[in-house]
Every structure is written in structure tokens, then in C-alpha cells.
Length: 166
Image (cartoon, rainbow, N blue to C red; front, side, top):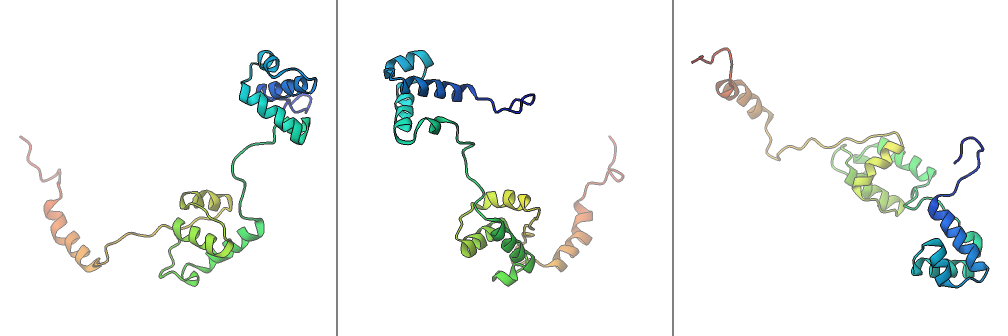
């Protein structure tokens, strides 16, 4: 957008598309439009079809492509309440929320499929975060870890104070 005049400016691609559209509406042949605009045969044919089906205005850029927000504001607020209520309240065995768990909840409650890798982006947009689980072995014993730190670790730890210099 031109900041001085506050009028939208056309990208070079949009300008070429609009010029081609004007030529096509003036009954120029497809090969003439290709020569004048430098566009490909398939592009000019596609533009001609768009004009025929939807009119000249349909050639204007429709905005950015890509997925839009798939959860409504109301659904996001419901998701926030679910997360605040805790993972156990949603049927999980502990209170750790993970991206996979939240993606599963979104699918079950709202019927919207999110890949778990995009859940973090969604949560950042909602200004909330989740906790990743502390991964430990099923046979984890804190007493055994404490004992190892107390007895074995000092024995194998390199200590610069005790090392002899050559």
C-alpha cells in the first residue's frame, strides 16, 4: 500500500493479470495477449475462463493464500477453559498437557484436525502455553539416583584440584 496516498498498489503480477483481462475483454486473441503480457498459454486461458465465469473483477488478487484460523473465538475460549481445567479432567492420566494431547482434544471437542506441531503456534496466538512431560523411565527410583550422585558421581567426576600436573 502506498503510504502517501493510502491507495492500494498492484503487484506486478496483478497488474499483468489485469492488463491481460482488459485485452481479453477487447477480444484480443490468446496469442496476442501472451505476446503483450509475457504470460504463459495456460495462464491466459485460465484468466479468460475466470472472466467468462466470474467477470473481470475476479482477476483481482483475492488476498493471501493459506489456511485461515480454523477455531472460532468461541471455540478458542472453550479450549482455554479445557486447558485450565487440567489434563486429568479431560481423561488423561496426569496433568501434563502436550501438543499431541491438545490436538486430540481439539479434534474430539471441535471436529477440527490440527497437526500437533501447529498446536504450539495456536497456543501462542491464544497467549497460553502447555507443559511438556518430564520423561523418566518407568522403573525410575529417586533413591537410587540420589545414592548414585552421593557415591558414584564423586568417584568418577573429574576434579581439576585433584589432578596431577605432568
